[in-house]
Image 1 (cartoon, rainbow, N blue to C red):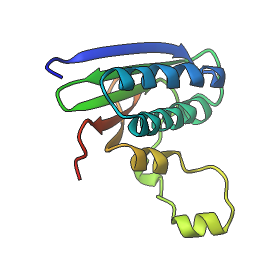
Image 2 (cartoon, rainbow, N blue to C red; image 1 turned 135 degrees about the vertical axis):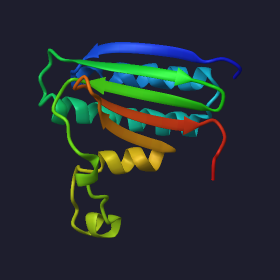
Image 3 (tube, rainbow, N blue to C red; image 1 turned 180 degrees about the vertical axis):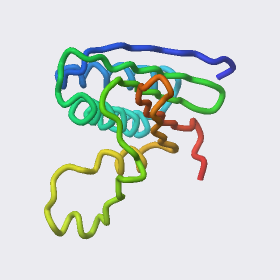
Length: 144
């Protein structure tokens, strides 16, 4: 990849649109050469992030927008998901102890854990303009 390419999508915050969002992100990831295993990881991470926006930031209000930007540069794919809903402090979110979580047969609450597990980098910021931004990165080559 020798140049920077940007793809953008603005879509209403409805759970019905999650499939469109997944297809958009998966299509870009495939186009730039990610293997199917990584495409699935990217798709799931974005689905989790957008579900969090719909359910937590927007409280299921359907008249709000989610902005997605997918940026491809020399060594990575960066996805930025922006909303104008209720923000939170990522430091307040505790990563689950999976053995205990599974033993208790709990449901839900794994979105951020999944995003951090599936992607190489995950950051959340509240921008000065009041918008919330989730930035997730997947490198083309395994960085481990």
